[in-house]
Image 1 (tube, helix red, strand yellow):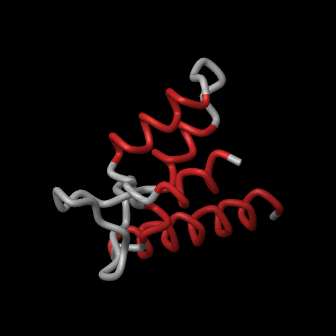
Image 2: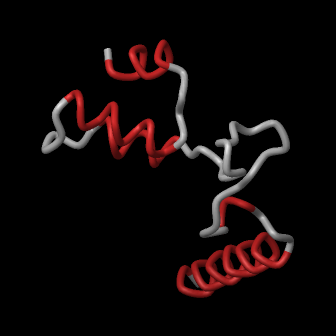
Length: 86
């Protein structure tokens, strides 16, 4: 009896996952979500927090190298870069 109940719950969970996946649920999506008002660089490329975070948390880079990497990413505001680096 217990095994049948467990199988029913697993089946229900699987059906739920399939429904979410076919509905385009962003939780299951491996692509980045873009938003209409997101930050955009001069060349039209979006800024993503994971890219900024990777630069800021890279212990192999000096502060000047991090500044340069953030500028290459498309962040031009010196005050914003200073805030990110502090």
